[in-house]
Amino acid sequence: MHHALPIGIVLRRSLRMLGIEPFYAGFIAGMEDVLAEHEGSVWLQVAPSMEKELECYERWAASGQIAGVVLGDLVEEDQRVESLHDLGAPTVMLGERDWSAGPRCGRRLHRGG
Image 1 (cartoon, rainbow, N blue to C red):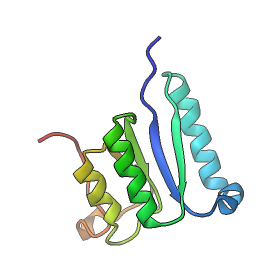
Image 2 (image 1 turned 60 degrees about the horizontal axis):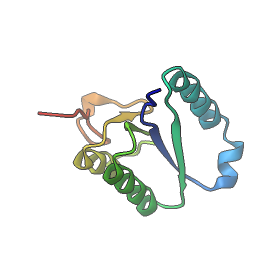
Image 3 (image 1 turned 180 degrees about the horizontal axis):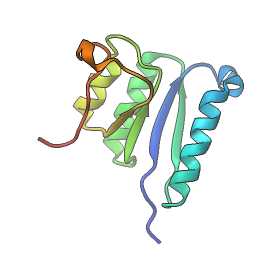
Image 4 (image 1 turned 90 degrees about the vertical axis):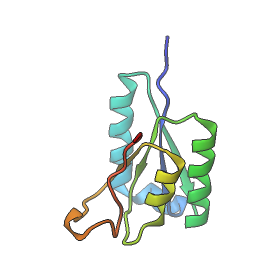
C-alpha cells in the first residue's frame, strides 16, 4: 500500500493556547479526514518563535518527507512566504489576502518555471 507524504503545518503559539483555539482544531481534523481517504496525514509542529518556525520548514524541506505546507496566520511582509518559496516547498496559504495590493503579505507560489 502506498502512503502519501504528509502535509505540514506549523503553528506559532503556546501549547496551552492550541488546546483552547477551536479554529485550528477543526481545521486540522478536517485536513486529516480528507487526507486519510488518500492514505495521507498532517504533521503538526508547534513553534515558540518565528525563528523556530522557519527552522522547521527548512528541516522538512531538506528531509523530503512532506508533500507541502499549509501556511496560516499571514501577516504583512511575511518572511515565511519567501522562505518557503526559496525552499521549493509547495505551499497553500490559509486565510484571506488582498492580491490587488501586490506581494506585501505574500505571493502566489508555484513549483517549476
